[in-house]
Image (tube, rainbow, N blue to C red; front, side, top):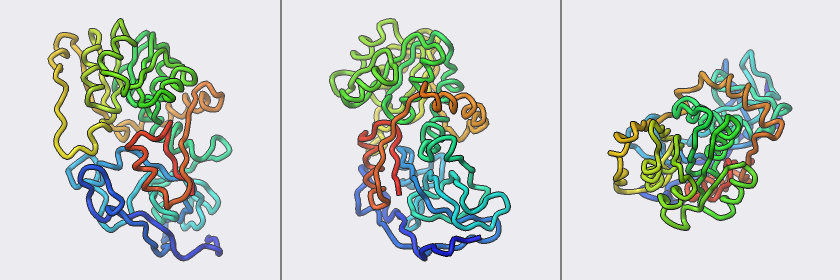
Length: 339
């Protein structure tokens, strides 16, 4: 089945050259592409919400990484939610809403097995890109599995007003953390962390040395550090780590646009003293937790016990600026592009 009123072309963002340092507008183009009708087992989706995330900066580089780089001259990819407008697949009908990775474009044609049906009646469609989507699962898996969180732990989260960090802190509080501390890049975000998300303490990392502010916020040290930032935050966390402390490295946004390798923490030897553990993780290794995550977190979102924020930018023409905004830290909560 097909919606007969469909346009014939769709706008999509393409990578023209691999950015060196901070991405520039001339590295990208917003191009017109012909809409491809679905073949057997495929669907055509009109995207309604697009995701922009820090990890996408890594895919713009040709360096070997955990996922393939974006191809030059081709449409980029990212999380998206939209309505099926044509289907040649048995299990997905026109009118269904699906989550998929054909983002950075208005229309996407792909194999139906790459789509996950979502219900707009259960939760707003945008939440499937954030609080109930990949970012939410990242927080859940990183805190509970990688960092082995247990009741009574003192938890420090960097990038705490972002989509992942804000959920890490709230989940830790809901599961009995003794103290939750967050860092963010503005006084307004610090206020949000304490007053809305229930963090016990928070600080603006631009207001002074992170190590000093962390020691003041967590005088008894920390048991878990959830790292979204790297750099001076990681060094500060190692300095405040208690015996048997755990560090889950989710991201290092502070170094993504560096043209030279960033120096590592100067105090790594302290991990010997504390018997501390530092471990990186990727959400893709933890999709087995997805059903448990949705079952546990879904009702908390519906009841308002777990709060979330979204920063919504309108129009595909602003997709690139929204992405750069994430790298700058302009967003509070999940950055979403609404088409």
